[in-house]
Length: 601
Image 1 (spheres, rainbow, N blue to C red):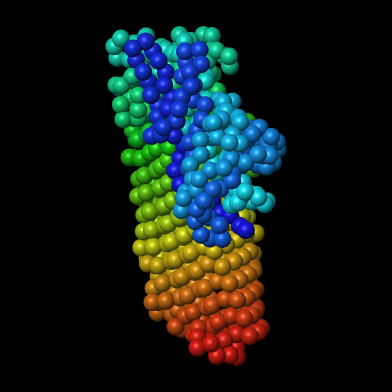
Image 2: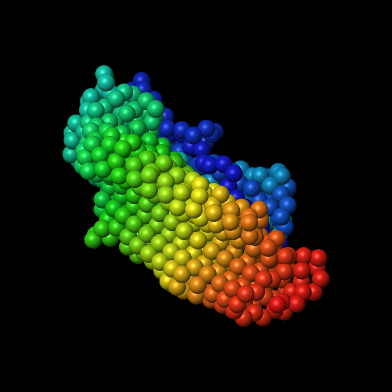
């Protein structure tokens, strides 16, 4: 039996802080019970919903589940339903839950449930990488199946940690009237005794606060909502909000209208144990470089449902920049949110830059590079960092060069189920551009390039020692003079394709997969087609080596075209035959579009 599981809605928890007659609420819709300890309301359970399938069909009945909260590597357990898991191992006892049409709901930490003996505490969420691991069994006996992948824990449990960190006795209120202070920075400066055992919360009421803010360790900042609490300043060559270690920032709006050479909305350098949730950040006053959120050095930060925008004038506009420094590389985890760079000369939704110890893990984010005159990139990963993507949408639109995702100069990318799109580039338009000693692994997902002239590449693997693996992806390129579903070219790139569909559409030449120059391409069980162009090829080879097994190559000009190199075809359909001008070829059990044995020329 094989199980498959995915989360269909996020966690719900209510955080309430009583301040005399004032109640502050940071909540997602939900019915999470609260238990009172010593006069403070402390959430002890977290609601999670999921879906489980058995042999591809939604399961209905009583399901038996085991739960553990682990780190990203899965080798450390922070909590499990019965407290018996260690090192990411399977707990001993199961929690029986009703499952209807595949859907189930569980209250993690609810000790009234059978098999659930452990409450959740704030310490469980004290780090930036927390994942829910689940085991499932359809009946009352038999082995359990671990459901993969582990699921990133979303924002709301971190509110649990923040509540624990800031008990009501240490709340300072900033308000336009009737508060402790009218200035946020004045409130922070007044706190001199914050420590791990004595943290503070600075709560900010509705209104506009025209100032820059620098946080302190163990001082948490919370607004009344990103549409009602605004922090704005003209911080030229600086930041409106500067982060500190051991802090949380929630529910407010930050805007830098400065005109300097480099302008940040929010900035953190060499900070750790920081969570930013439900915040809007903008850098849009002009100047040369606008960066909504900048994170650098030896930094560990989690961003949850953050919206970041950098735009207006200037040369570079970047929604989120993660950059190494001589002190080290940041480790950044992003859950949800939207990151946009717009206009100027270069626009990046997210730019990760520099250092093998720089890491970005992002789940279900949206990143846009829009309307810059030269280059627009949804996500750029450069100079040896590692980026892991799960889901999400990445768009580069307009300019001379448009890339949904760019991965270059020794960078490492792993992407599962992403949607990458590039549109409107007048020179090069590529949904994924992997080049110069970089490694990209794609699992599922959609890659679409819609050019405005020039060349369109759904997936472009380019340059010396670049390695690309694509598993069951869908790729489409159109709108250019030359349109390639996938291309491997220049020097010695290595391309490996396992399943999936690759389409080149329209223009002077449309090619499903094109292997050019030296290097090597392996294709297994893929469908590739060139269509609606002046010349249409499913597979085109001009140099190097291509090995294909179990594939379907379709093109009205030729299913396969070879002008050089070496081609090996086995048990594959050549719908349109083979056009051979040069090179060598070896064919075994190939057949044409009518399923008739075909002799390669």
